[in-house]
Length: 260
Length: 254
Ligand SMILES: Nc1ncnc2c1ncn2[C@@H]1O[C@H](COP(=O)(O)OP(=O)(O)O)[C@@H](O)[C@H]1O
Ligand SMILES: [Mg+2]
Image 1 (tube, chains in turn yellow, green):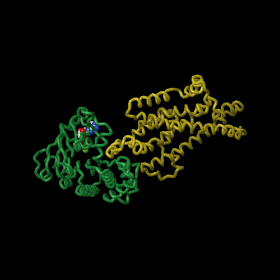
Image 2 (image 1 turned 90 degrees about the vertical axis):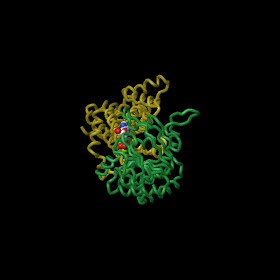
Image 3 (image 1 turned 45 degrees about the horizontal axis):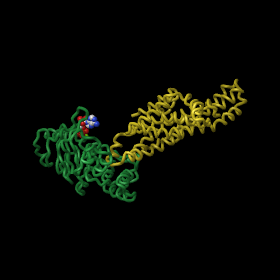
């Protein structure tokens, strides 16, 4: 039963690069959109707030699968130009997760104590200086844990790209391996799960580093434990990730947005 | 020069300041005392443009805080106008409000560089002088979170002074400090008051300090001035029963 493991790992590995590319691409776009629309939701201008709100509600409130199929199959008909599957996938992941991320950014910025705004006014900083130099840097440390959850969700969401023929890990398993080794489906899918798990752990590791950095930025002492044990993390954080996995992303971002 | 002209401030239905009139002359040290909730903080926050008046006007050096002239009309002040008027005013808060994402030095140089347009070198020179004045030269590269409350408040005072304000608003700046740190901060303020011509508007419950440094003391109750007198008079032989009971209560509390 374990004869083919080498072959399975090798075949799935062929999809690894595409999964990583789709995930990283999605993370970059989602992060940019999160900040743009998260800050736009806090704008003093009603119109700007309204536009941001529409973006968030649209991409959060429609099915990810349908978004994907729409961009890949419907949009080309409208614009008369076929988009590369990977590009379409990255764009949808970015737009979709950017909508959740915008709520994270908004919540984190709002969690910075009012006293900090008042300190800025007393020192006569402009609203832009205030945001860029004082408020945003302080909000980063609040954003990192929910973004960690979000990015892991995004990684897992990249499996949907199999539907638009991106040959990522799930595609390799489903279209290449299962068709030939259907009796070993359990082994194949277990290997795929482990691949995703390792990638998720890598994301968490990177985000922990980012959290330590953001914490140092606001003068928080790094925990006494080493990085590796920090990865195992405080109970709360681990539980939050599990919750997120169970409850789905909307729940997580609501909670992080509403913190304090 | 600060002048309040029939200033009313309401939060919802609650009248916090009721047709308040008073003025503060340049270089004067005026202390506001009175029971909690009497509107002292609100006065400072109005001056710092952290709140807006409900009606009436506040003048700083003859310029209205809430309105500006456009043509022949008075219109609500815009951000740019407010920043110009606000430039002369500094404030020190009860909870310090230092920026935790900046080291002590940067807390002191950020606004002078960005708001006053000083060069980094000028701003740092000024910051180091001020850190010397407040006795924290060795903390120049510390994070605010590494400082005691007293040290943080000294940094906050230095940070306000770095903007070279004409007026300094102090809102119970020692109330959040451990008792043994209070005297040091008060001594520093006294030192600054006597060595500069900054106008002070100071809210405090430290009556000995108020008596020692003030040119004038205003006793507040329910958003109105009960008594306005030089400290010796107000603390020794107040005209009003309300002042007497308040002072007695403060003394008993210690
Ligand atoms: N933002 C606010 N919203 C509603 N009520 C407020 C607000 N700020 C102050 N108040 C009320 O105004 C009154 C005066 O408050 P304050 O100026 O802080 O008094 P003091 O500094 O003398 O203790 C209090 O009754 C307080 O509850
Ligand atoms: Mg107060």
